[in-house]
Length: 299
Ligand SMILES: [Zn+2]
Image (cartoon, rainbow, N blue to C red; front, side):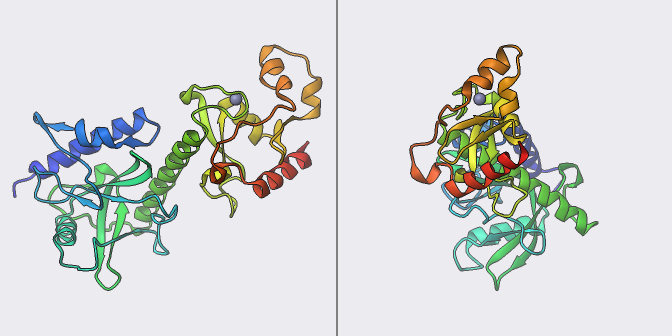
């Protein structure tokens, strides 16, 4: 092959396309756009399939892989700091697994899509396959810097620690984007305290911070909050009682200031949190209790 060949150019263009798409949607990408909106030299190139490993009609080799949302940690790095992707089925020589092996041998980068909710994915790229483990029926994968990839040369492990670092950072970003999308959807894109419905002003707050062991990125550990109420919650200006009432710290209630203090904080004292209808998406009461204890201790 003469480099850069069609395969390489399509991949580079696809990465740019997915990057823009993810920027538009806060780190997540919609199925419809991946199927319909990417064009290369006037032709529509489909970037995702019904499941697993996907190869567009224009290319000889797979361009993307995807995973299901069932296990929130299925795509976390293993003890080796890298990602592990299961073979399609159990036959190492089925055509999809053979395709990925060739992608590995040629050092071609992949797109990775993790399903967050129906029709939405968190993307990761460029992913390179760095190992094939037929006995475990998995491929080992790592994230790379786009600029570190050279056409025709399989990525060399110049610095293994750096590769693990890049992979870990990419996975953290992926989890954060997926968490945000799931929490905001559960709360129907509104602040659970003040009902503000501007998605660009909303965050998915953790009830128990993610640096703690049980601060997992699950909807029941999340709250959809506007920027102001997120910051107020994180800094203990505002607390949420386990009975879902908002509590404003006592000395803040005595302050006199402009409309943001009055309407945005003081008047919300004692109001009830708006929560998702589905039980499994509602804030977990033990987590709320633990977090409320921390609020009381801080005030
Ligand atoms: Zn708010």
